Length: 358
Image 1: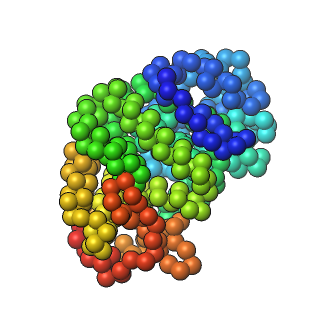
Image 2: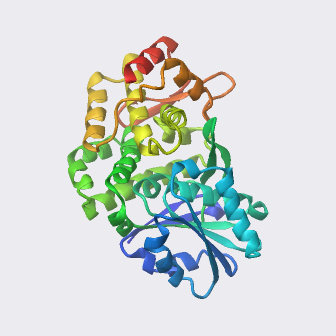
Image 3: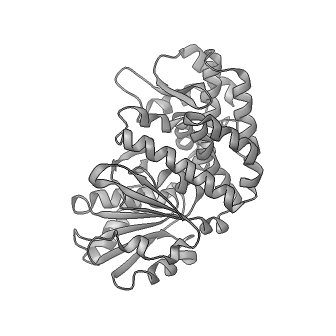
């Protein structure tokens, strides 16, 4: 088992990575506040793993709420089902919520924990690759709105993150590829050597080689933990973690939540960001080609949906958390492993990127 730490002073927490961790209840119980535990999962993951986790919590008063599976259910109505369950079971402010599932479950559970009685504890057990390498770490929680993705939420850090890599055995191929998009992101924004490693080992990752997957998860979490520790609330460098996300969120919102997986939209968005960076002369076309090739090998889409034209893209991108009073900001590249946030880009070149992406 590997252990990392997100260093946030008195709110620091561990990330445990390894096999058969669902059967190691102590990793969870030492971080549970009070006696009441609400397990939140979805109707895909719960039949596979809920009972195993619940068996590790026999000393606690546990209840469970099972959500429908899919990005289209990451909304205020679904959030309210968690509040209803907490109130029906008379959970108090010393309760702990545990998210067992992918990014949607983790985000919505964390937001419920941030809001219920003005803030209660929660723990993360991510079961998809995307959640393991990205969304379970860092304390970003929230839900979607029809007009914009993740625009309603709160920063609320978990007490711990337990990543049992065995849960990837039941992950379908499309979800595995979606998770690899976020893994590629870490190489692009921070670690050129890791990007090189991904190019060499992408076949092993696609074949679900346990050693390769554990290393990719560990390195991704390590990079994110470093960035979150330095900039918890995204006032500076944490925004780099959004490479491709402004484009990607526009795709998700514009096509209807759930039609494109988050990682699929981010993959296309990262390639668009690379393309725009190359049009400015900040990176070479070779770097764009390497990025495209790696995403292709991960079986990720590299073209934006044709139904979103340039005008629609711009309208959707305007509703973005990185937008400021002075206008839209994008995460762009100076090199593989060197990203930056800028609002100083050419609108004409952005238009070229948007037109060429479909």
